[in-house]
Length: 109
Image 1 (spheres, rainbow, N blue to C red):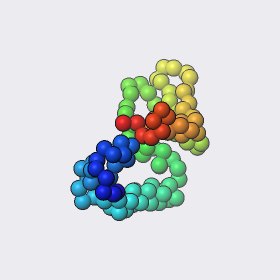
Image 2: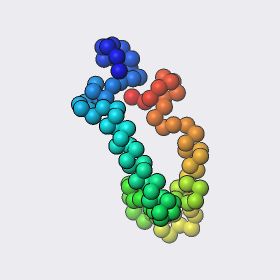
Image 3: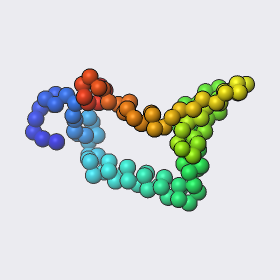
Image 4: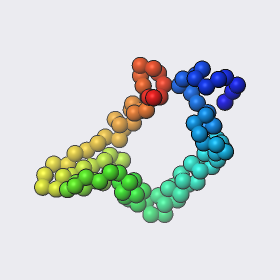
């Protein structure tokens, strides 16, 4: 990043300071782009359902719980034996980043 000593900017860090070694910003960007393009290709080929199923399959599993993502991107959760379906609003969830500490004005550490 620059020649400052570690800790001078507590809310910022460089990849090498975090132990990434030879993996620099270029390699990180390339890896992210490859994964993003793979998901976009799957979305275009198979529709959103495949992307949603893949995402839900990576979530921690709970007993007697069925999850799916609807066409608006909201997470729907149904407990087996219960008639009600809980809905997690995607727009509301994205309104405030979970990583942002409002008191510090930077990432949560």
